[in-house]
Each structure stands twice: as structure tokens, then as C-alpha cells.
Image (cartoon, rainbow, N blue to C red; front, side):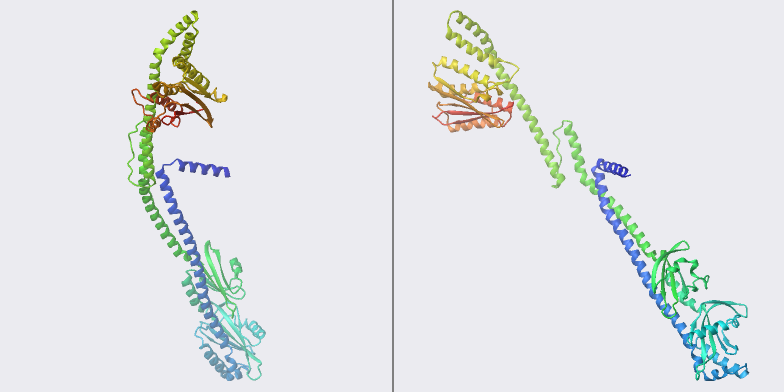
Length: 597
């Protein structure tokens, strides 16, 4: 499974990586804008919903407390009213009398009437004396049919309470008129004021309709349903009046009503609700409120929908802005890509028009510089090839006549040996070796040893010509002798020294050749003790060597310049010749080449 996710992630990344820069910028802009906005909206919705839920629970619990206090006060008023017979001496005197006389009936019922008028909502008040005589005042259509059957039960409850009022659970009663109602009752003993002995009981029946106003007020606030439970968790009253007197078996969540108050989420009749409850300290009745979750989160959902619309609007605007911005950002890159294709096709005359000094503009500037540099390098390579061809042509031209002469000299040498003229034969031999070395085609390079041998042949002929005026002193390490090097570079330098340092002035001297290796570079130092050169001429020669300036015509430095050009063409621009000289103190030519050519 992890590998599947990994492959999917890789494919998505490749799709993104292969996309154009414009598409990447649009995706990045949308991601950076919509992700924080979406997360912020989600967190805001969650916090707002939670806050609304908490505030609703707090408010409903506060309202429930107020309504429960009203109900408690109503019941406490009935309990207090139930103590009034203790202060009605005339009624107490009549209740102690046996029988049911007219005078007794009138006195007791007038007392009941006065008691019943204290609370307008009281349904009925019943008084039963110790002789089971029943007296009452009703605000219903008739007497409850089970009143006499319940007298023993009422007496037992009143007796166990020892003079205190007893609150009974809700009961369904039927009246003599045939109508039915649900009532809760308060029962209390009536005691003689003098002897404190029981002389009867008083029963208050109150319709649960007195709770309708309280429950309706709560329902109007919560937009849900409410119910009141007694001490045994029997339903005293509910919003629909459908479950009065039923126990909590129908709704298991009522078993969670622990403690004085609280709230929790519950699923009731297929809908999510918040259940809040509060328990009365006086009656131990519980007022329960079921608040529909949809009502609690209605404003939060409205806020969420507005946020979603705002998010979509901002996302659309961000998409438009990102398209515009990415277009302007990638337009120079697109132009550069097209120009690069033209350069790739060989058109080096194109340039990118740079308008701004940002990173793209800087890139365009460097691109233009790069194309210009490529043009320069191509020009330099072309010039180098032309120079090389020209140098080869000059070398070829210089080899045509010596080649003819070489064959002729071989004939002369053979004739000199036949005539026993060893000196002529030696001169002819050395000249022939020189010509053979220089005329070898197809290979530009020889070895250090072959180059030194060629130099020795040349000096032998010069000494034969000038009566041994020149001495050759060589100091080359043996390990360098087999090193490959460009041919015909030492002899022109020595020839230049003989011609300009000695021959013009008829002098003689010593020519030195030394070499050493430094890293991958080899340095040859060719020195003479001739007349030397002025500083101006030295500077001019070195400047020519650095810039590869070739001047047509004759004059000092032409041979050296040709050697310098060949070295640079073969080894690179950092190699070549360098002249050191002082007038009257000789000349030193330093040649730098690479050891592995």
C-alpha cells in the first residue's frame, strides 16, 4: 500500500515537474493562497461551531435554572399553603367532630375555598378527616374518581412524613365528568394546634398544565423539545404531552443525567441533539432540554457557506491574478526559449531585449553576453584555423626548395666520399639530416632529443661556415629527452640569435640551451651572449607574442613570432615565448610548452 502511494506521489510529482513554468506558477499561487485560506476557514468554522455550542449550552442551562426556580417556587408555595390548616382553629374544631353536619361541611369547605384561592393555578384541594369524610373545592369538571381509593395511601405518606409536605409523582386521573388529566399532588397531615395530634390530611392536585408555560418558554429558546423528570426519572411533563408518567427505559440516554447539571450530545429519533439538564435542589426534579444540533450550528453553517463563497471568489480572483502574473513572469523566459532554439539552429545574430533589471533580465543579459562570446570564440577558432593553415603553408613553401636541394646534396655527399673529401661529406650529411627532419610530413611533433639533434646539425653547419665561432652548451635533464614536443621550434630561436646577436657584428660567443619541468609544463631557456636588445624592442616583441600579432615583411622577431604562433596553436594561449634582454648583455628566450601534447 505504501509503495502504491509512493508511485502515485512520484507520478504526480513528474506531472508537476514536466509542466511548463507558467502552469507551475499558477499551481504554486493557488496552493499558497487557497490552502491557508481553506485551513483558516475550516478552523474558524470548527471554533465558531464549538463556541456556538458552548454558548448555547451555557445560555440554555442559565435559562433552565431560572425556569426551574419558578417551578420550585410554585411547588414550595403549595407546600407552604398546605400548612395553613394549622392556623385555622375553627376548621380544626369541626374536623375533630364525628359525622358530617351541615355546619361542619360549610365551615370546612369555606376554609378550603380560601386556601384554594391563594394559588389561582391550583386545580383541586381535598381534606379528609379521621372519619374518612371528604371535603373539597374544585377547579375542574368534577371530583377525581380514585380519591377515596387513595385515602389510605395518602394517609400512609403523610404519616411517614411526620407533618411535612410530601410531593407525589405525576398521575393520570379521571374525573366524574369523564375527562382526564395529569396531576402532581402534595399531601400533608393536618394536626391539632393544641395537641399536635393528626386530625386529617390535605391533598393538593395540580394539573401539569401549569408547567406548559415553563416548557414552552424553554422550547421557544432552544427550538427543540423539553421534559421534566421527577426523582424516579419518570416524566412529569414533556413538550408533546406524549410521554407523561413514562419512565426512562424508552430513552437510555436519560441514564446519563448524573450530577446537578451537565450537557452531552445524543442521537434522538435519528437526529443529533445536545442534551442539557439541571436538577432542582428543592424537589430533585430535573429539567431536560433537547436542542437540535442543526439549530445550534445554523449560524455557523451560514458563516461556513459565506466563507466558502468568499473562498471561491478569492480563489477565482487569485487564479486570474496568478495567470496574469505568471504570464508576465514567463513571457521573457518563453522569448528566451525561442531565441535559444534559433541559436541552436545556428543563428547567432539574435539577441534578447532586456527591459527590466530583475533576475530574468539579468539572465537575459548574461544570455546575450554568452551568445556574443560564442560568436567571438567561433571567430577566434576560425582565425586560429586560418593562422594554422597559413603557418603550414609558409612551412610548406619553405620546404619545397630544400626538398629539391636535399636530393641534390645526397648526390654531392656521395661524390665527396668517392673523392675522399670528408669535410664536404660531413657538411652535406648534416645539412641532409636537417632537411630530412624538417621535411617529414604527417607528424608535427618529435621528441626533445630529436629537436636537440636538429639544433646540433644546424650549429655544425654554422660553425663550418664561420670557422667555429659558436659554442653550444646544453643542460637538459635526461628524463626529458623522450618527452614529445612540437618540431622546429628550437632551431629558429638559435638562428635568430646567431643572425641578430653575432653575424651582423662579426662576433662569436656561446649559445646555451637548458630545460626544466614544473608540474605539467616544460620550460626551455635559450640564451646567448650577443649584443642584446633595447627595452623598447623587447617590450614590442613580448607584446606581439601575447597578442599573436603577425607582421608581414622581414625584420627581427619574424622567426620568433612564427614559432610563438605555432606553440600557441598547438598547446594553447597560455604557452609560447618570452624574451629577456639588455643591450650589450645578451638575450634570453624562455619557451613554455606542455609536457603531454
